[in-house]
Amino acid sequence: MLDTVEVDSTFKKRIDIKIADKMFFKNEMLKIINDDVLTTKEVSNESIDLIVTSPPYNLDIKYNSHNDRLSYGKYLNFSEKWLSRCFDWLKDDGRFCLNIPLDKNKGGQQSVGADLTTIAKQIGFKYHSTIIWNEGNISRRTAWGSWLSASAPYVIAPVELIVVLYKKNWKKTSGSRKSDIGKEEFMEWTDGVWTFSGESKKKIGHPTPFPVELPRRCIKLFSFVGDTILDPFMGSGTTLIATHLNNRIGVGIEIDKTYCELAKKRLITEAKINEKRLFEVI
Image 1 (tube, rainbow, N blue to C red):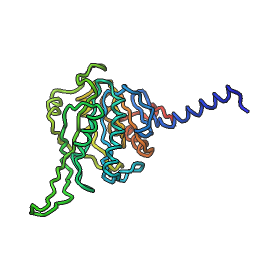
Image 2: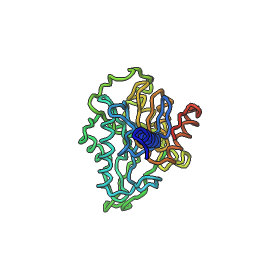
Image 3: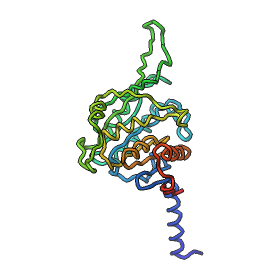
């Protein structure tokens, strides 16, 4: 039979192993957490300067570890839960760039952008603005409805939204207060219509990647150098690549271990991180 000291030591080791299992890897600037956004304890409240993410759209996408075919009511309930966690994680002057569809027609028309924005405001987020992302290479012409007839036409906009929210104070006073955005970038990006191509899922190896350009613009426009950026649905790691290339601290949460591995490989090849400098916890 173990004495008290041995029991305490064994218990502590088990706790340490459990915690380590959630931390896929980290170094001084990057952290990947292999965990569920709804239950993870690896992110401290009021520790994040900017969240940039694109959550599941509930379009029956074949993810490895997520059911993307919920009823719309359950999808909104799921959204309320993870948005509430993000609210807690943000600093009082923290910002949130939420990439979501304007609407959806698969399985019935739904005003996704408006509904998620409303939920975020009910949680406590304050609304700042909406950026229209015009994906130049994406066609949404999947259905015409009634051809050349007023009986039942479909109107489908080939755009997505980046809803810009904040927690309490829009003016950012925390952090280094050092900006790295150029004049031309500032002038272009403060225009609320952004036009650049989407990303190839075949090239990246993930069913719904967004291009590095999206988080790059959000990070440089809405955060200071050295700020901490979070993507709670990290996927293939695009947001973390942008954080590293722009001298920010990056935190990613991803429930699927295969996608964590994909993100790590992309950080090494695209962000040019020296693999030997990664402190692996697994």
